[in-house]
Image 1 (cartoon, rainbow, N blue to C red):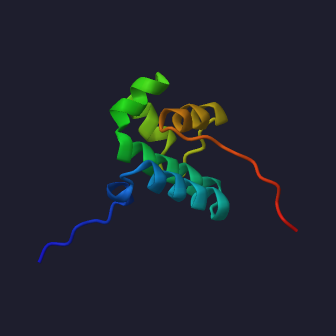
Image 2 (image 1 turned 180 degrees about the vertical axis):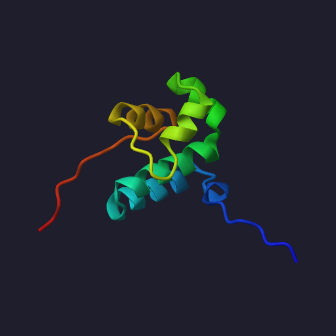
Length: 94
């Protein structure tokens, strides 16, 4: 029996699912996990489309959003805008 690799990007098929996934990553993840989550979202939408909208090359995107990468904040913001997301700050409830 052949095993298939689980790909979270296969399940990010709506704006609501993408937003929830990113919010969980932002809330619970560290900086590396957040970069990986943004990469999964970009893959789900399509790296070619994201590359076109950000003005970056596909290889640059893959490199910037790979495990262990440390992309510039401007890159993260470009990709978030391209995937239809934004960062929002809410006060922490004490």
